[in-house]
Amino acid sequence: MESECACRDLASFISAMNALVAQTTDAHACVAFVQRALPSLLTQPHCLAPQHLTPAAASYARHLVYRHPQGRYVLVAMVWQPGQGTPIHDHGGVWCVEGVYRGRMQVTQYEVTPLEAGRVRVTAVRTLTAGLGNVGALIPPHEYHRMANTGDDTAVTLHVYGADLKRCRVFIERGDGTYGVQERELHYTTVAA
Image 1: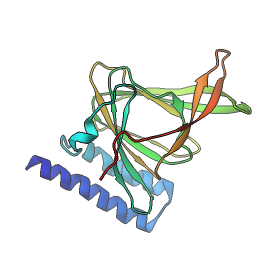
Image 2: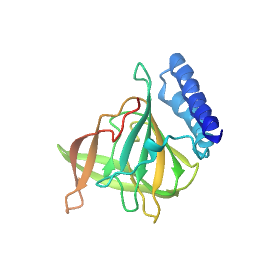
Image 3: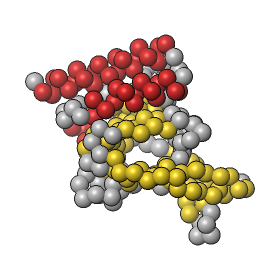
Image 4: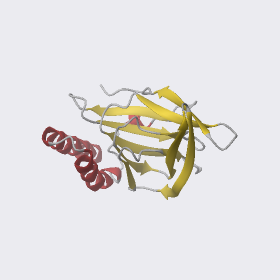
């Protein structure tokens, strides 16, 4: 019965999101709604199916939970084993709200200053540790961050993106105080049926 309740909670969240994106595609309105609605979903212990909680060995796992039929948003579960994290990256111009469903995550936000083609300066703005139910948002042009599981337990995060994020830019330290920019294609570990 608890599992059925949680499925209704996830279904209710998706229905509410579908109603919202039928009325507006404004990033600020969408982000504000998700920031209000997502925390209660994150505290439901069985809102994600077992296949969305499966880690991957080589990197963090990205599981597609739901894709809007017209591509107006996607819901993605990410599973992070201890020590797994992202490089500094952007979100390809797509808004995002992400929250912690299980465990703790360290999130560092950055400012990126272009220097010349393929090279940027990256400055850390703030680092925080997020726990159960905590949410954060990125709206372009302020969309640069790094996420990492620095704890001893597996962590799970739930992400709502304003589109199906298939590519992003990652920023790799060059050793001279600057960072190189690389395009990265993104893939799902599992895809919703």
